[in-house]
Image 1 (tube, rainbow, N blue to C red):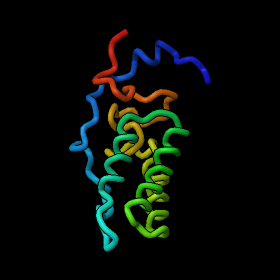
Image 2 (image 1 turned 30 degrees about the vertical axis):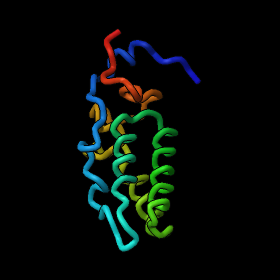
Image 3 (image 1 turned 180 degrees about the vertical axis):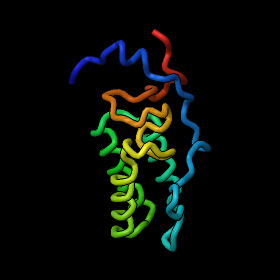
Image 4 (image 1 turned 90 degrees about the vertical axis):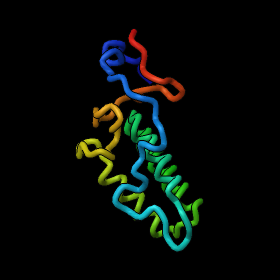
Length: 125
């Protein structure tokens, strides 16, 4: 893994720490079904998308989302449909309020997330 480019890290925008109230749940898909409520899986997924990071991190976030939907009792076929939807429409090129790295409005892949987990804000160097 390459070392971070300090100039790029310094240019990262300061963003607020994630709060679950920032989530819109499952965006334009239902937050619950006959199997129960799976909103928590969508909120956790939104948190990952808020901070952003590398393409590999996004893939992992989407896979964890699919696994969480299954853990919430969602049938496998429906979980795969949600998974494919976030893979297709969550891409940063769409620059939507739910796209990858939406917290800093960067909408791109970076090796490092905008704000490390546990930090209130990315501090100035």
